[in-house]
Image (cartoon, rainbow, N blue to C red; front, side, top):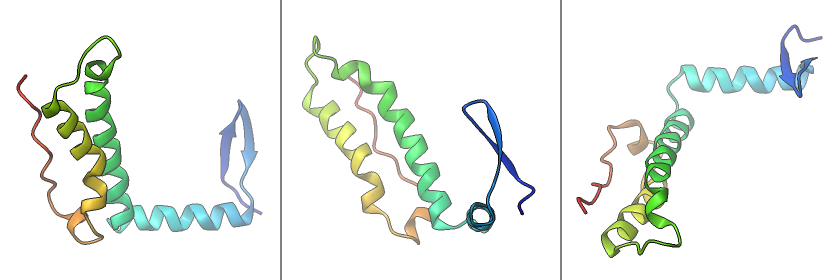
Length: 98
């Protein structure tokens, strides 16, 4: 039986053997600098950049074409990369000045 535990709804639960094997594989992938890790980090940073501009997309503001294109570029960015290019430095879309 597993020694690892996790917290769910305030209750400490022991992992099953299958859960522990899956978690070990995830940790190994992260430690190896895999593309899965890079994509996860890319999406996290992308989500922050999108969230920082959400106020511009509220119903009482008109979103300019430049901002629409910027936000679309952010949303589309992960699909423009592959397992190799995601490990390279990312060129982020440039935020409009207005």
